[in-house]
Length: 165
Image (spheres, rainbow, N blue to C red):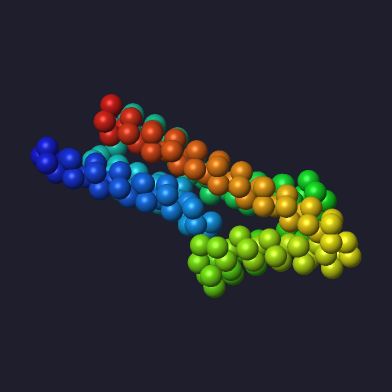
């Protein structure tokens, strides 16, 4: 591969990874998966060296962790406030539907609304339902922070793979 082709491959890979990273602002956007697929394509195009295989393996584990972070952190926060798994599942399902109905903001809004309603009808107490909803919102915020950090780390590992090794 010539020097100009190498530059094009690296720049295109970096742009695709940054799209994956900044796409994480949209709650259902699979940012870690986009970054992982981009790294995989880079490895296929450039060839996997032993160091590349090692770095790609770490990127793969991070992608899996980043993909699970949303559900785990949102659910765990809501669970700490006393919400049962059934209410959390209702909220998550509504969030998934909301993401398609109203892109970008629909997912989080419908997830939180559904959790509030499920908890309100279960507890018959607005303050307790609000506490569970607030906890899930905090979990959503932490999930974004964790996923974004994982995405930055994945891109950093690719930079080491592409430019240092």
